[in-house]
Each structure stands twice: as structure tokens, then as C-alpha cells.
Image 1 (cartoon, rainbow, N blue to C red):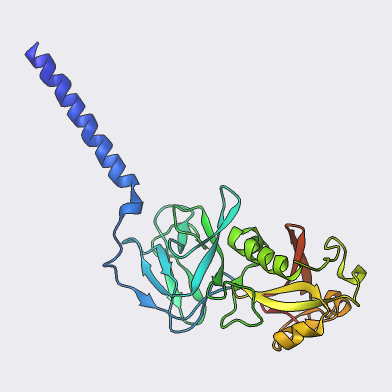
Image 2 (cartoon, one colour):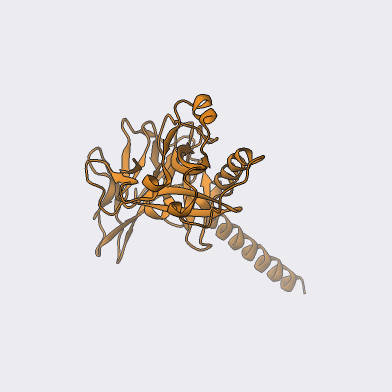
Length: 286
């Protein structure tokens, strides 16, 4: 009987030890990276094909294989992350990274170069290497970097956001961004009848309303506001355009080109509509 009890106790001890080992291996969130050497970007740097990390972003390798790096943005910025599992967007100031995956045996190495940004080297990978704007075991993909010091609708911004095409749509799904647009519109139309925001710009009353070019989180944002000379006096730096011009073919353009596929798009929320340009990396409102 004594031998049986000892055997049972030994089995329980071994199982407990195994579970603790598994738990420690899976709990990557508790890894302390505070002592890991950081590198600092001296210039804005490309990640992927059209998203730039701002100057002074810090980065470091998260493992000995060097197949993954994590980023730390400077003060005033946040990542726009897309959760590939949930299909949702959120802002985050930490935890985003870039990783390289091998299609066969071995591993790839993530590298940084001043000219091309981040990419993958073959290392001892026997297949092909694929780079992605996520950490290896994360579902959160970087779709942009926004400037959160510009946290209220303004006529100017010190820094512009850098967003992918998906990010330009996704930022309108972020609660903080949507709520600020609503606050701005609510204030403007508190005592004034608002236009039918479901209509196209060309069908709105251009004698009563005008197109205003503003910024929020470093994102260039178009709003329809009352055509009132008092607004121009209060906000002399506010860029205005007629509804016809803003909604026309020359409403947006890519820097250094005639415009190409760059065009004005819109997003509706809370009974309002906000506008943005998309179609190329340097797409802006004229």
C-alpha cells in the first residue's frame, strides 16, 4: 500500500512538473525584453510596400534566430493594427513587429537596410522566406502608423499618418477616430440644419455648404461644413474647396503625378460622412 501511494505521488509530481514546463513555454508575454539591445531608426523607414515607421522608432530582435523584430514607436505615435482572426482594427503603442517565415526546414533572418527597410534573408532556410508585418505568433498585422498628438480635428498637423490602402479604410473603424469626427460635426451642426450626408457632394447645396480639408491623427480628412465667412475668420488656415471641385476628378492627386487612380472616398458614421483620398502612397487632397 505504501509503495502504491508513493507511485501515485510520483505520477502527480511528474504531471505537475510537465504542466509547469508547458505553461512556461507558452507564456511568451512574460518574457522580459528590457535588457535587449535596441537599434534606433535615424530616418523614416519603409515596412512592407507603403507604410513608413517614423524617425526615432526603436527595434530589437526577440529571439536568438533573429527571424523576428519588435518595434517601439516614439512618443506621439501609435500603430494601426488589424486582427486577422477577428477582422477588427485597433490602435496600439507596443507589441507590433515584423517577422520572416521559412516554407520548409530551417529559419530565415529578418534584416534592416537603410534603403529598403525590413526584409528577409535565406539564412539556413531550405525553402523560401516570406516577410510579414506581424510577429511570428501574432494575428495583429501593422496597417499603418498614426500621429496621436493630433488627437482633435485641426487645420494642420505636425506629422502625417502613414497608412496602407486597408489602413485608410480601417482607421474609420477605430472608435477613438470615429468619436472625434462625431464630436466635431456635432459642434458644427448644433444649431444649424445639416445637409443630407447620404447624397453625393455634387448634389448637396453648394450655396450653403463647402468642403473643408482638416487633419485628425495625422490623417487628411474632408468634412462638409456650412459656407459661413465667420468660419474663415476664426480659422484662417482652414483649406476650403467647393463641393464640385472636391468631388470632381481633380479633388485628389498623387505627388509628382497627374493623379492616376487617386480618388476621393467616403465613410459614413453617426449620420455624418467624412472623406479621404486613396489610390497611391502620396495621395492627398488638392
